Length: 306
Image 1 (cartoon, rainbow, N blue to C red):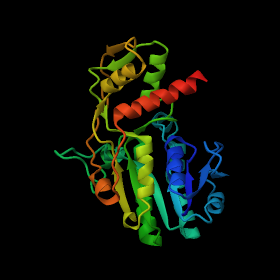
Image 2: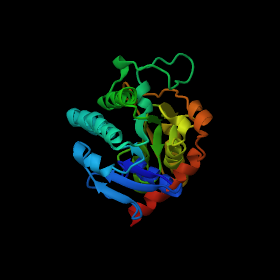
Image 3: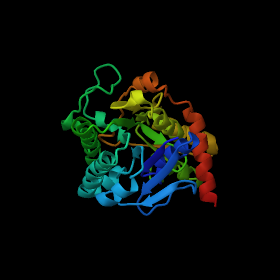
């Protein structure tokens, strides 16, 4: 059993990481700002990550620090670029400094497969060793994650703070933010409204069920994962049309799907390999998209009926 801190542990992914760590027998403390954890059997520190002294105090006894807290809503990041840069980059530096000062065994950074945005797709799935292409970063959120990864490497090289970087694919499941595609479709379907699909609905994401993603954090605590980066990508392409059809299947044939003109510049997706995580961590998604979507629909249906 280890003493573990999860920043952003009251959020969507963070709450599932907390569940996985508790289930694995670890003593967990959540660091979040104003939002309490979803379960009462973990510690809680209400801390603003921009306040270094508070971060230092809250992580004093932590052996492992999972750093998930960030501006993750890309629309919010677009609207507030200065705050997003401050929280995502300086906040990461503050957590790394706390790990250094307090002698934590390792810092785990939540990054994203969107760091591959500018990478050319030269026939094969993109690997962790792919260099960043800054001209194609495309979004302030992506750039802050690139910068945070760089600062992790700096703290490792300059101050011997071990890190593990986990590049998240697109998670879905219970507790996900309601402004995302899947909850939007579920809400429309439950209201009897049609699900609108752009173009032919061929845009895809390699969705990962959130509990599968959370399990990777426990596996990443092994010594061999120190100073390594792993893609936590879903097992296959799931198109927007498949999402709509899956929700219709889960809710009822009365749900209508309407096609609207494609949006210019809509991101189609990139192929990213999770082979390294499988090879070195023994991690691979086990929940099929069909099963995960059904669990997600059931969770939202219950939430909105209360």
